[in-house]
Length: 369
Image (cartoon, rainbow, N blue to C red; front, side, top):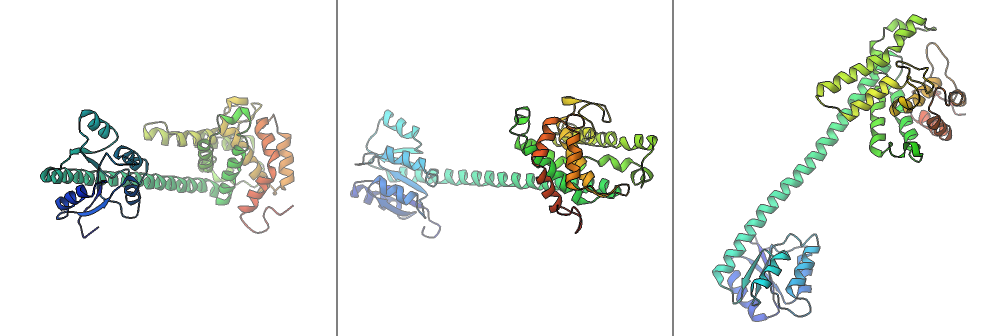
């Protein structure tokens, strides 16, 4: 490129024709010339491609039509405007050239004013296309950035809300991290089972992961005298404690309704908050659902919730070992827990222990076996 002057590549196997075109163009443009299609492709797909190509049709080895086909097949040269300049005239030839993607068709011998006018027009159109393409690329990048930003804000908000509930229950942010990773690894290892293969897509598993922090959000509505009681709850107190599932569900549902449309993320969070204490045999709460009546999100969350509660110390209980927790969950297969999900947990129980160790709250917690 010479200064701000655009570059025109002439492709013609007749040197005299190249000289004529060079004389027409050299006052306004930088001119490059080659005598065959292969050389044209090399320049057009190189480091400094031309802004426009004047292409002869009748050339040996590779004619203009084939040259244009190959230009359009390469990402770097596909956007360069091509004007056929040839003695091969007629409606059929012009249509063929335009159908292949040529911008225009000029007959030989060339008229200088026509050549300059057509080149000027197509360079201006190219600039407009480039502006539009660049704006579209910018908008696409901005959409990706905003989407990622919204996702990050969503994650932070879910962590903050979940931590609010856990803090009142003497738990920590690491409990949230553990349960998130438990439910993800559990769901991932269920995808090869026919019951779940069509349900547990990568997108769905990510929704479970993101929603897990809200499973106990309803605890913010439970009085401290019950939530942090250091001894066994009375029947009346336990009845109040159980309402945290409904409190959480109703709060998330209200947020979803405030948006004015069903939100997949909040729908999953509703299911987890409302149903993670339901039991396979129907003896759970708050609705006494059984079997596949229990939403999949709740059935999945049940095991991470119970496992982490068992291995964690509370004011009213000691921390169980990993082996003890696995034994207790084994006893609940088909009664408390979905049997397929529970058996998958038993197969990957060591992964749960690894997650617990990776996100423990203090040294000495969850000791090595």
